[in-house]
Length: 508
Image (cartoon, rainbow, N blue to C red; front, side, top):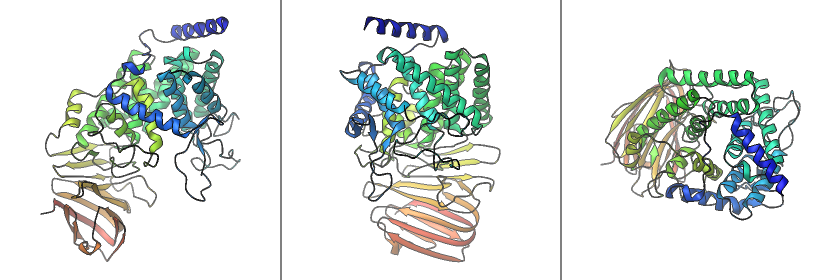
């Protein structure tokens, strides 16, 4: 045992000598975490424990659909997140369970050099290995390289004394394979914001640890390219995603915490603060939602599904104020709550002016954000309703399976729940918000979904949507109009339009 501890100490000292002396591990423990962060961290860990499979040493998926091929699957990425949480908590038995999990995760890495999936990990051990004609996203996910790799990075920086030295060496090797695979694949662009930021952090970490001058220069060039793209308009390319902007914040927190140079730490902190200010400008604390438009979103109500931005905000706001639902095994997008340990370690650094806007509504205002040369987002943040649109220069459409939501409306209904309107499908589109509504330009068929408790289809027509707590007067040059209701959803189809105008106001 003494020999093993001595090896571990040498490993820690060796790592410490190889990084910039100003990068100081936090060694965060539960006693040092603020009340709100601790609460959501403990909820996250309790749910992890509920779904942990001691036979496979992995966390089971909380979702199971009858007759689904993925029923009973285990989650490799989320299991690595649980391991970080266990090492942070460090209660009796936690170190052994974390080591077991990390070992199980490492066994899921793809080890065949030259393959597009080299260095990434299976999403589930039950998932078949990629065939020669495997398709990215369908058969494998290259992003697991950086999601799992950066989790390993935090463990190796913060808690190397809590894992066996030989396990640490395997983790370093896994990170190197992930970087090598990403370099070889050449698929990643700086505009893929959330992955680009995590990749920059992980590449910098591997370059510093390995003392590789080529990787050090290449990783610095990469982070500078991400920063240059951001600085063009002060916005991330994947604009306003309740999920992925939260991952952006994580990647940038890694930069400002662990970057191997003062420059990397400074620009990481700068972008992190700017992103928080953008989120706060779009946030309506009484509605507990960030207004659209959303470049990538999985839901329309942050009170009803777990978003990573909402999780970050929960670490600084109490449960009654944060845009996060009550957590239960059936909560939509529940696995994202298992990201809480990363937030507990890194901490949210929110500028004081942004934090003020998150706590108390500062008054009605219009937000206008230039994203690229062609794309401009606008949003109206009102007392009772929020809505937004994205003008794309007619370069983007809204496909049937798209995460892009270029025109959105949210308000609180008389039932107390959030009602929303979402443009779900359109041809190439421009949408612009102002103080009175949304103007939409698109030629062809536009599909819209309205969701509200006790919505009445009989009160919805082509020219007027009389909704619970909201009225929308619609002007559109459509050829035909149809509507269909299922439960609290009403789906509308306007065909043959060239443009629409939504005049939005609270119900009288």
